[in-house]
Every structure is written in structure tokens, then in C-alpha cells.
Image 1 (cartoon, rainbow, N blue to C red):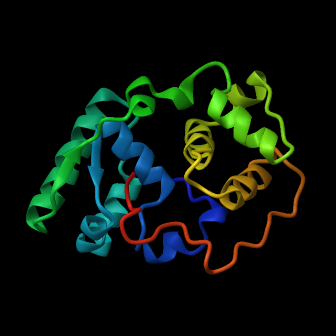
Image 2: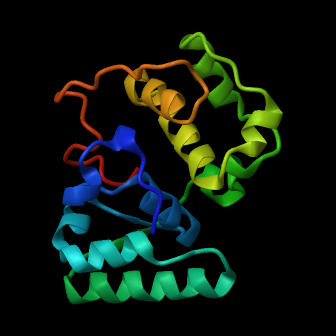
Amino acid sequence: MYRQFRFEGDIHEKLDCVPLTVRRKLDLAQLKISLEGWQALTRPERQALCHLPVDTVEDLATYRDVLQGFCARSNVTLKPLADEDAEKRTWNSLEVPALVTSRLQELGARLESAAWRALDEEARYALLKLSHPKRGPEKLHAACVELGLMPGPAPKLEPEVVVCAPGEGRS
């Protein structure tokens, strides 16, 4: 089973947007897919991409092959990913990345390095991605509550606060 964050709402039921778990896998594979491309894949293909592991070099090679095969079958173009955070796997650093620290301070929260290291890789990835300045604070706040980094309850996410929108499927 793959990691399903509650703050992503019903994304896991519909799979109409790229879940953060898959975004991490795409980053590791150094590939990006557009939202339109993701939606062109069949639901079983999207589910497979959610569940396939990327824990070893062999897993990652298989993931890339499967993804490329699905995309070729659906005429979906994949692009190489040029992302410094992905190349360096910034979410696996021993210290809390400055971007995360800064955004958490804006929310009145603090995260010590030991607590950062205690989080699993997908949680660290989610915090890093949700800390990006182009994103509003709502999802980051909800993620922090879900991960036990801030007291609850999580802010209510209004329908207009979407996980993805056209053109935002893979950034």
C-alpha cells in the first residue's frame, strides 16, 4: 500500500491529480508528467504507479520502464526533470531544509533536526514540497497537524483550496 495523506482529500479515491507519493517517485525517476498526461493514463495504470516501489535501484529502473510504457501506450509525453531538490534528494538531508524552517516559522511552528530525521521519507518530501513559496500555507498547516508537528485540528480546506489544478499536476 502507498502512503495516502489525509490532507490530500479525496485525491486517492479519484486519482485525478498526482498524489504526493507519486510525485516523489517521479522525482526519484527524474521524470515529470503533466496533469493532462496523468489524467490520460487509465485508472489501473495510475493505481499501479501509486503502488509500485522505488526502494532500490532495480525498483526505480522498473518504475521508469513501467511509467514510460504506460505513457507510450497513451501517447503521453514525459519530460526530464531538472530539479535541484530532486537531484540532491533534499528531503533526505540530516538538517531541516531552510525553506521548510522558514515556512514553518510563518505558521508559528518549529521542527528540530531530530524530529525531521524521525519522519519517514514521504513525510519529509511532502513538507518540502508544501513549503514552496508558490503554495499557500493551508496544505502545509494541515500536513503538520496530520504528522503531529502542530496541535490540531487541521484547518478546514475549502473546496477552492485544491491539491492540483490544470497545469499543476507535476511541478
